[in-house]
Length: 430
Ligand SMILES: Cc1ncc(COP(=O)(O)O)c(C=O)c1O
Image (cartoon, rainbow, N blue to C red; front, side, top):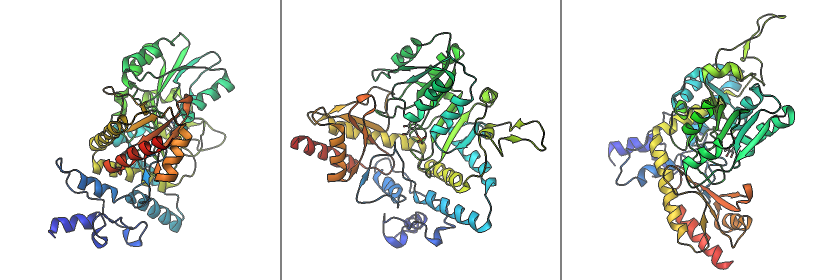
Protein backbone atom coordinates (compact mmCIF):
# COMPACT_ATOMS: atom_id res chain seq x y z
CA UNK A 1 0.00 0.00 0.00
CA UNK A 2 1.38 3.44 -0.83
CA UNK A 3 2.04 5.93 1.95
CA UNK A 4 -0.58 8.25 0.48
CA UNK A 5 -3.23 5.55 0.54
CA UNK A 6 -2.31 4.63 4.12
CA UNK A 7 -2.54 8.29 5.13
CA UNK A 8 -5.88 8.59 3.44
CA UNK A 9 -7.30 5.50 5.15
CA UNK A 10 -6.02 6.68 8.50
CA UNK A 11 -7.45 10.14 7.93
CA UNK A 12 -10.90 8.84 7.14
CA UNK A 13 -10.60 6.54 10.13
CA UNK A 14 -10.93 3.25 8.29
CA UNK A 15 -7.36 1.94 8.07
CA UNK A 16 -7.80 -0.76 10.70
CA UNK A 17 -11.23 -1.81 9.49
CA UNK A 18 -10.59 -2.32 5.79
CA UNK A 19 -11.57 -0.11 2.92
CA UNK A 20 -14.89 1.65 3.39
CA UNK A 21 -15.78 0.00 6.66
CA UNK A 22 -17.47 2.65 8.74
CA UNK A 23 -15.46 4.51 11.39
CA UNK A 24 -16.53 3.79 14.96
CA UNK A 25 -19.11 6.12 16.36
CA UNK A 26 -18.31 7.85 19.60
CA UNK A 27 -15.15 5.80 20.14
CA UNK A 28 -13.16 7.45 22.89
CA UNK A 29 -10.05 7.66 20.72
CA UNK A 30 -11.90 9.75 18.13
CA UNK A 31 -12.33 12.61 20.58
CA UNK A 32 -9.31 14.45 19.21
CA UNK A 33 -9.71 13.09 15.70
CA UNK A 34 -8.14 15.25 12.98
CA UNK A 35 -10.49 16.83 10.44
CA UNK A 36 -11.71 14.40 7.80
CA UNK A 37 -9.47 14.26 4.76
CA UNK A 38 -11.15 12.86 1.67
CA UNK A 39 -9.32 11.44 -1.35
CA UNK A 40 -8.73 13.65 -4.36
CA UNK A 41 -11.80 13.77 -6.59
CA UNK A 42 -11.22 11.95 -9.86
CA UNK A 43 -13.65 13.19 -12.54
CA UNK A 44 -13.16 10.00 -14.51
CA UNK A 45 -13.78 7.69 -11.54
CA UNK A 46 -15.75 9.60 -8.93
CA UNK A 47 -17.21 6.53 -7.18
CA UNK A 48 -14.15 6.01 -4.94
CA UNK A 49 -14.57 9.53 -3.60
CA UNK A 50 -18.26 9.01 -2.92
CA UNK A 51 -17.59 5.65 -1.23
CA UNK A 52 -15.18 7.48 1.10
CA UNK A 53 -17.88 10.06 1.85
CA UNK A 54 -20.39 7.26 2.50
CA UNK A 55 -17.95 5.66 4.93
CA UNK A 56 -18.36 8.75 7.08
CA UNK A 57 -22.01 7.88 7.70
CA UNK A 58 -21.56 5.15 10.31
CA UNK A 59 -24.98 5.88 11.75
CA UNK A 60 -26.80 4.98 8.51
CA UNK A 61 -28.33 1.52 8.72
CA UNK A 62 -26.62 -0.50 5.93
CA UNK A 63 -29.72 -2.71 5.56
CA UNK A 64 -31.78 0.14 4.15
CA UNK A 65 -31.50 2.81 1.50
CA UNK A 66 -32.13 6.27 2.87
CA UNK A 67 -33.91 8.61 0.45
CA UNK A 68 -35.42 11.03 2.95
CA UNK A 69 -32.85 13.76 3.53
CA UNK A 70 -35.56 16.32 2.76
CA UNK A 71 -37.31 15.07 5.90
CA UNK A 72 -34.36 14.48 8.17
CA UNK A 73 -30.76 14.21 7.00
CA UNK A 74 -28.42 11.82 8.77
CA UNK A 75 -25.40 13.40 10.45
CA UNK A 76 -21.93 12.15 9.55
CA UNK A 77 -19.58 10.60 12.07
CA UNK A 78 -17.45 13.77 12.47
CA UNK A 79 -20.64 15.69 13.28
CA UNK A 80 -21.87 13.14 15.82
CA UNK A 81 -18.44 12.96 17.40
CA UNK A 82 -18.22 16.75 17.66
CA UNK A 83 -21.66 16.77 19.26
CA UNK A 84 -20.82 14.08 21.80
CA UNK A 85 -17.43 15.50 22.71
CA UNK A 86 -18.83 18.95 23.26
CA UNK A 87 -21.74 17.69 25.33
CA UNK A 88 -19.51 15.53 27.54
CA UNK A 89 -17.06 18.38 27.99
CA UNK A 90 -19.79 20.82 29.02
CA UNK A 91 -21.32 18.33 31.43
CA UNK A 92 -17.91 17.67 32.95
CA UNK A 93 -17.12 21.36 33.33
CA UNK A 94 -20.69 22.32 34.31
CA UNK A 95 -20.47 25.04 31.70
CA UNK A 96 -23.07 25.99 29.07
CA UNK A 97 -20.37 26.56 26.45
CA UNK A 98 -22.11 29.67 25.24
CA UNK A 99 -18.74 31.00 24.07
CA UNK A 100 -18.95 28.42 21.25
CA UNK A 101 -21.81 30.31 19.59
CA UNK A 102 -19.56 33.06 18.21
CA UNK A 103 -17.12 30.74 16.36
CA UNK A 104 -20.02 28.59 15.12
CA UNK A 105 -21.75 31.74 13.84
CA UNK A 106 -18.59 32.67 11.91
CA UNK A 107 -18.64 29.30 10.13
CA UNK A 108 -22.35 29.63 9.31
CA UNK A 109 -21.84 33.20 8.03
CA UNK A 110 -18.98 32.06 5.79
CA UNK A 111 -21.09 29.17 4.47
CA UNK A 112 -24.03 31.40 3.51
CA UNK A 113 -21.81 34.35 2.57
CA UNK A 114 -23.47 36.62 5.09
CA UNK A 115 -22.07 38.68 7.94
CA UNK A 116 -21.98 37.06 11.39
CA UNK A 117 -24.23 39.78 12.79
CA UNK A 118 -26.91 38.69 10.31
CA UNK A 119 -27.02 35.11 11.56
CA UNK A 120 -29.25 33.81 14.34
CA UNK A 121 -28.66 30.18 15.39
CA UNK A 122 -32.14 28.72 15.71
CA UNK A 123 -33.53 25.24 16.35
CA UNK A 124 -35.20 24.68 12.96
CA UNK A 125 -36.63 26.46 9.91
CA UNK A 126 -40.01 26.93 11.57
CA UNK A 127 -38.44 29.03 14.31
CA UNK A 128 -36.88 31.42 11.78
CA UNK A 129 -40.15 31.86 9.89
CA UNK A 130 -42.04 32.32 13.17
CA UNK A 131 -39.62 35.09 14.21
CA UNK A 132 -40.54 37.03 11.05
CA UNK A 133 -44.27 36.27 11.20
CA UNK A 134 -44.71 37.34 14.80
CA UNK A 135 -42.12 40.14 14.77
CA UNK A 136 -43.20 42.21 11.75
CA UNK A 137 -45.62 45.05 12.47
CA UNK A 138 -48.71 43.68 10.74
CA UNK A 139 -52.33 44.52 11.35
CA UNK A 140 -55.79 43.35 10.34
CA UNK A 141 -56.20 43.38 6.56
CA UNK A 142 -52.46 43.36 5.80
CA UNK A 143 -51.70 40.69 3.21
CA UNK A 144 -49.11 37.95 3.04
CA UNK A 145 -48.50 35.83 -0.06
CA UNK A 146 -47.17 32.27 0.31
CA UNK A 147 -47.02 29.23 -1.97
CA UNK A 148 -49.63 26.47 -1.78
CA UNK A 149 -46.81 23.92 -1.40
CA UNK A 150 -45.55 25.56 1.80
CA UNK A 151 -44.80 23.04 4.55
CA UNK A 152 -46.81 23.53 7.78
CA UNK A 153 -43.59 25.02 9.19
CA UNK A 154 -43.90 27.72 6.51
CA UNK A 155 -47.67 28.20 6.45
CA UNK A 156 -48.84 27.84 10.07
CA UNK A 157 -46.78 30.81 11.38
CA UNK A 158 -48.74 33.01 8.91
CA UNK A 159 -52.13 31.42 9.53
CA UNK A 160 -51.49 32.10 13.21
CA UNK A 161 -51.12 35.78 12.32
CA UNK A 162 -54.49 35.49 10.61
CA UNK A 163 -56.01 34.09 13.81
CA UNK A 164 -54.34 36.52 16.19
CA UNK A 165 -54.06 39.75 14.16
CA UNK A 166 -56.44 39.38 11.21
CA UNK A 167 -53.65 39.19 8.63
CA UNK A 168 -54.91 37.91 5.26
CA UNK A 169 -52.99 34.95 3.80
CA UNK A 170 -53.08 34.60 0.00
CA UNK A 171 -51.79 31.53 -1.77
CA UNK A 172 -50.28 30.96 -5.23
CA UNK A 173 -49.84 27.52 -6.76
CA UNK A 174 -46.23 26.92 -7.87
CA UNK A 175 -46.05 26.33 -11.62
CA UNK A 176 -43.72 23.49 -12.59
CA UNK A 177 -43.63 24.80 -16.16
CA UNK A 178 -41.27 27.73 -15.69
CA UNK A 179 -39.66 30.28 -13.39
CA UNK A 180 -41.19 33.34 -15.02
CA UNK A 181 -44.79 32.19 -14.59
CA UNK A 182 -44.23 31.87 -10.83
CA UNK A 183 -43.21 35.53 -10.72
CA UNK A 184 -46.38 36.36 -12.66
CA UNK A 185 -48.59 34.26 -10.36
CA UNK A 186 -47.30 36.23 -7.40
CA UNK A 187 -47.59 39.55 -9.21
CA UNK A 188 -51.26 38.80 -9.86
CA UNK A 189 -51.92 38.60 -6.09
CA UNK A 190 -50.15 41.82 -5.10
CA UNK A 191 -52.29 44.72 -3.85
CA UNK A 192 -51.43 47.90 -1.92
CA UNK A 193 -52.02 45.84 1.28
CA UNK A 194 -49.31 43.25 0.43
CA UNK A 195 -46.78 43.43 3.24
CA UNK A 196 -44.95 40.09 2.95
CA UNK A 197 -44.07 37.65 0.19
CA UNK A 198 -42.72 34.29 1.26
CA UNK A 199 -41.64 31.41 -0.96
CA UNK A 200 -40.30 27.93 -0.46
CA UNK A 201 -36.87 28.25 -2.10
CA UNK A 202 -37.27 24.61 -3.14
CA UNK A 203 -40.80 23.27 -2.65
CA UNK A 204 -41.04 20.41 -0.21
CA UNK A 205 -43.53 18.09 -1.99
CA UNK A 206 -42.02 18.08 -5.49
CA UNK A 207 -38.67 19.91 -5.28
CA UNK A 208 -39.50 22.80 -7.65
CA UNK A 209 -36.94 25.64 -7.55
CA UNK A 210 -38.65 29.01 -7.29
CA UNK A 211 -36.79 32.04 -8.73
CA UNK A 212 -35.87 33.74 -5.46
CA UNK A 213 -34.00 36.79 -6.71
CA UNK A 214 -36.69 37.77 -9.25
CA UNK A 215 -39.42 37.36 -6.63
CA UNK A 216 -37.32 39.36 -4.15
CA UNK A 217 -37.05 42.25 -6.62
CA UNK A 218 -40.81 42.11 -7.20
CA UNK A 219 -41.48 42.17 -3.44
CA UNK A 220 -39.22 45.17 -2.95
CA UNK A 221 -40.75 47.10 -5.87
CA UNK A 222 -43.98 46.89 -3.86
CA UNK A 223 -42.39 47.64 -0.49
CA UNK A 224 -43.06 44.10 0.81
CA UNK A 225 -40.86 42.03 3.09
CA UNK A 226 -39.35 39.02 1.27
CA UNK A 227 -38.83 35.91 3.37
CA UNK A 228 -37.49 32.60 2.07
CA UNK A 229 -38.28 29.23 3.60
CA UNK A 230 -35.03 27.49 2.73
CA UNK A 231 -35.57 24.19 4.52
CA UNK A 232 -34.99 22.32 1.25
CA UNK A 233 -32.21 24.50 -0.17
CA UNK A 234 -29.62 25.04 2.59
CA UNK A 235 -27.02 22.33 1.97
CA UNK A 236 -28.58 21.07 -1.29
CA UNK A 237 -26.71 23.60 -3.45
CA UNK A 238 -24.46 26.60 -2.81
CA UNK A 239 -25.57 30.22 -2.96
CA UNK A 240 -24.81 33.54 -1.31
CA UNK A 241 -27.87 34.36 0.74
CA UNK A 242 -27.67 38.09 -0.13
CA UNK A 243 -27.87 37.23 -3.84
CA UNK A 244 -31.38 35.87 -3.21
CA UNK A 245 -32.58 39.47 -2.68
CA UNK A 246 -34.32 38.43 0.52
CA UNK A 247 -34.77 40.28 3.78
CA UNK A 248 -34.71 37.02 5.69
CA UNK A 249 -34.03 33.35 5.07
CA UNK A 250 -34.58 30.33 7.33
CA UNK A 251 -33.27 26.80 7.04
CA UNK A 252 -32.81 23.66 9.13
CA UNK A 253 -29.49 22.13 10.13
CA UNK A 254 -30.99 18.63 10.32
CA UNK A 255 -31.87 18.17 6.64
CA UNK A 256 -29.51 18.78 3.70
CA UNK A 257 -26.82 20.34 5.89
CA UNK A 258 -26.34 17.10 7.87
CA UNK A 259 -26.25 18.81 11.25
CA UNK A 260 -27.66 17.39 14.48
CA UNK A 261 -31.39 17.35 15.15
CA UNK A 262 -32.85 20.63 16.37
CA UNK A 263 -30.49 23.01 14.63
CA UNK A 264 -31.34 25.84 12.29
CA UNK A 265 -30.08 29.03 10.70
CA UNK A 266 -31.99 32.27 10.39
CA UNK A 267 -30.51 35.06 8.27
CA UNK A 268 -31.85 38.58 8.54
CA UNK A 269 -30.24 41.60 6.92
CA UNK A 270 -28.60 43.82 9.50
CA UNK A 271 -30.37 46.94 8.18
CA UNK A 272 -33.81 45.27 8.50
CA UNK A 273 -33.48 43.92 12.04
CA UNK A 274 -35.27 46.84 13.71
CA UNK A 275 -38.36 45.98 11.60
CA UNK A 276 -38.76 42.57 13.26
CA UNK A 277 -39.33 42.76 17.00
CA UNK A 278 -37.95 39.74 18.87
CA UNK A 279 -40.75 37.56 20.25
CA UNK A 280 -38.89 34.87 22.19
CA UNK A 281 -36.47 37.03 24.14
CA UNK A 282 -34.27 36.96 27.24
CA UNK A 283 -30.61 36.70 28.22
CA UNK A 284 -28.36 37.39 25.16
CA UNK A 285 -31.17 39.19 23.25
CA UNK A 286 -30.36 42.54 24.76
CA UNK A 287 -28.96 44.42 27.69
CA UNK A 288 -30.84 45.49 30.78
CA UNK A 289 -28.14 45.90 33.39
CA UNK A 290 -30.27 47.28 36.25
CA UNK A 291 -33.94 47.17 37.11
CA UNK A 292 -35.89 49.24 36.55
CA UNK A 293 -34.12 50.13 33.33
CA UNK A 294 -34.24 50.46 29.57
CA UNK A 295 -33.92 47.38 27.35
CA UNK A 296 -31.49 47.73 24.44
CA UNK A 297 -31.52 44.97 21.81
CA UNK A 298 -28.26 43.27 20.94
CA UNK A 299 -27.13 45.05 17.74
CA UNK A 300 -27.21 41.90 15.60
CA UNK A 301 -29.36 38.86 14.81
CA UNK A 302 -28.32 37.50 18.21
CA UNK A 303 -31.27 39.52 19.54
CA UNK A 304 -33.49 36.60 18.43
CA UNK A 305 -31.56 34.09 20.56
CA UNK A 306 -32.19 33.72 24.25
CA UNK A 307 -31.56 31.61 27.30
CA UNK A 308 -29.48 28.52 27.96
CA UNK A 309 -28.82 26.37 24.91
CA UNK A 310 -27.01 23.16 24.07
CA UNK A 311 -23.66 24.36 22.72
CA UNK A 312 -23.00 20.88 21.36
CA UNK A 313 -25.71 21.48 18.75
CA UNK A 314 -24.11 24.57 17.26
CA UNK A 315 -20.58 23.18 17.46
CA UNK A 316 -21.74 20.08 15.58
CA UNK A 317 -23.70 22.19 13.09
CA UNK A 318 -20.49 24.10 12.30
CA UNK A 319 -18.74 20.73 11.88
CA UNK A 320 -21.43 19.68 9.41
CA UNK A 321 -20.85 22.79 7.31
CA UNK A 322 -17.11 22.20 7.35
CA UNK A 323 -17.72 18.63 6.22
CA UNK A 324 -19.77 19.91 3.27
CA UNK A 325 -16.98 22.37 2.43
CA UNK A 326 -14.48 19.49 2.53
CA UNK A 327 -16.62 17.51 0.07
CA UNK A 328 -17.14 20.60 -2.11
CA UNK A 329 -20.46 22.41 -2.27
CA UNK A 330 -20.76 22.51 -6.08
CA UNK A 331 -19.85 18.84 -6.08
CA UNK A 332 -22.67 18.05 -3.63
CA UNK A 333 -25.21 19.86 -5.81
CA UNK A 334 -23.94 18.15 -8.96
CA UNK A 335 -24.03 14.73 -7.30
CA UNK A 336 -27.66 15.16 -6.23
CA UNK A 337 -28.63 16.27 -9.73
CA UNK A 338 -26.74 13.43 -11.38
CA UNK A 339 -28.51 10.88 -9.20
CA UNK A 340 -31.90 12.55 -9.67
CA UNK A 341 -31.41 12.54 -13.45
CA UNK A 342 -30.41 8.87 -13.35
CA UNK A 343 -33.47 8.01 -11.30
CA UNK A 344 -35.71 10.01 -13.63
CA UNK A 345 -34.41 8.12 -16.66
CA UNK A 346 -35.13 4.81 -14.92
CA UNK A 347 -38.61 5.73 -13.72
CA UNK A 348 -39.60 7.25 -17.06
CA UNK A 349 -39.26 3.82 -18.66
CA UNK A 350 -41.93 2.32 -16.39
CA UNK A 351 -45.47 2.52 -17.78
CA UNK A 352 -47.77 4.14 -15.25
CA UNK A 353 -45.22 6.40 -13.57
CA UNK A 354 -45.69 10.17 -13.77
CA UNK A 355 -42.82 12.37 -12.64
CA UNK A 356 -44.10 15.49 -10.88
CA UNK A 357 -40.75 17.25 -10.44
CA UNK A 358 -40.16 19.52 -13.45
CA UNK A 359 -37.33 18.76 -15.87
CA UNK A 360 -36.82 22.32 -17.16
CA UNK A 361 -33.51 24.15 -16.75
CA UNK A 362 -32.98 25.63 -13.31
CA UNK A 363 -36.21 24.15 -11.95
CA UNK A 364 -34.96 21.05 -10.16
CA UNK A 365 -32.13 19.69 -8.02
CA UNK A 366 -31.70 16.73 -5.67
CA UNK A 367 -35.39 15.87 -5.17
CA UNK A 368 -37.51 13.71 -7.47
CA UNK A 369 -41.21 13.12 -6.80
CA UNK A 370 -43.36 10.69 -8.76
CA UNK A 371 -46.97 9.56 -8.89
CA UNK A 372 -48.40 6.18 -9.87
CA UNK A 373 -52.12 6.67 -10.68
CA UNK A 374 -52.77 2.92 -10.37
CA UNK A 375 -51.63 2.81 -6.72
CA UNK A 376 -52.25 5.19 -3.86
CA UNK A 377 -49.17 6.89 -2.41
CA UNK A 378 -49.66 5.12 0.93
CA UNK A 379 -49.44 1.66 -0.60
CA UNK A 380 -46.51 2.54 -2.82
CA UNK A 381 -44.60 4.17 0.03
CA UNK A 382 -45.28 1.36 2.49
CA UNK A 383 -44.48 -1.45 -0.01
CA UNK A 384 -41.19 0.24 -0.86
CA UNK A 385 -40.36 0.43 2.81
CA UNK A 386 -41.67 -2.91 4.05
CA UNK A 387 -40.67 -5.16 1.14
CA UNK A 388 -37.58 -3.40 -0.21
CA UNK A 389 -36.17 -1.35 2.70
CA UNK A 390 -36.25 1.82 0.60
CA UNK A 391 -37.04 4.82 2.80
CA UNK A 392 -38.73 7.52 0.73
CA UNK A 393 -41.29 10.11 1.84
CA UNK A 394 -45.03 9.90 1.20
CA UNK A 395 -46.49 13.08 -0.32
CA UNK A 396 -50.13 13.92 0.02
CA UNK A 397 -49.90 17.69 0.25
CA UNK A 398 -52.49 19.30 -2.02
CA UNK A 399 -53.69 15.80 -2.95
CA UNK A 400 -50.51 15.13 -4.93
CA UNK A 401 -50.63 11.41 -4.06
CA UNK A 402 -46.94 10.79 -4.69
CA UNK A 403 -43.63 9.57 -3.31
CA UNK A 404 -40.62 11.87 -2.84
CA UNK A 405 -37.01 10.78 -3.20
CA UNK A 406 -34.15 12.91 -1.83
CA UNK A 407 -30.67 12.21 -3.20
CA UNK A 408 -27.65 13.25 -1.21
CA UNK A 409 -23.94 12.58 -0.79
CA UNK A 410 -24.32 9.07 0.66
CA UNK A 411 -26.62 7.80 -2.14
CA UNK A 412 -25.52 5.83 -5.20
CA UNK A 413 -26.65 4.99 -8.72
CA UNK A 414 -27.29 1.35 -7.79
CA UNK A 415 -29.63 2.50 -5.00
CA UNK A 416 -31.64 4.42 -7.62
CA UNK A 417 -31.69 1.28 -9.77
CA UNK A 418 -33.04 -0.69 -6.80
CA UNK A 419 -35.83 1.81 -6.43
CA UNK A 420 -36.69 1.65 -10.15
CA UNK A 421 -36.74 -2.17 -10.02
CA UNK A 422 -38.94 -2.13 -6.93
CA UNK A 423 -41.46 0.34 -8.40
CA UNK A 424 -41.64 -1.75 -11.56
CA UNK A 425 -42.31 -4.95 -9.57
CA UNK A 426 -44.88 -3.33 -7.31
CA UNK A 427 -46.78 -1.90 -10.30
CA UNK A 428 -46.70 -5.23 -12.15
CA UNK A 429 -48.21 -6.95 -9.10
CA UNK A 430 -50.88 -4.28 -8.63
C1 LIG B 1 -40.10 23.75 3.01
C2 LIG B 1 -40.09 23.34 4.45
N1 LIG B 1 -40.26 24.29 5.38
C3 LIG B 1 -40.23 24.01 6.69
C4 LIG B 1 -40.03 22.71 7.13
C5 LIG B 1 -40.02 22.46 8.60
O1 LIG B 1 -38.73 22.16 9.01
P1 LIG B 1 -38.40 22.16 10.57
O2 LIG B 1 -39.29 21.14 11.18
O3 LIG B 1 -36.96 21.80 10.63
O4 LIG B 1 -38.68 23.50 11.10
C6 LIG B 1 -39.86 21.69 6.20
C7 LIG B 1 -39.66 20.30 6.63
O5 LIG B 1 -39.64 19.37 5.88
C8 LIG B 1 -39.89 22.02 4.81
O6 LIG B 1 -39.72 21.10 3.87
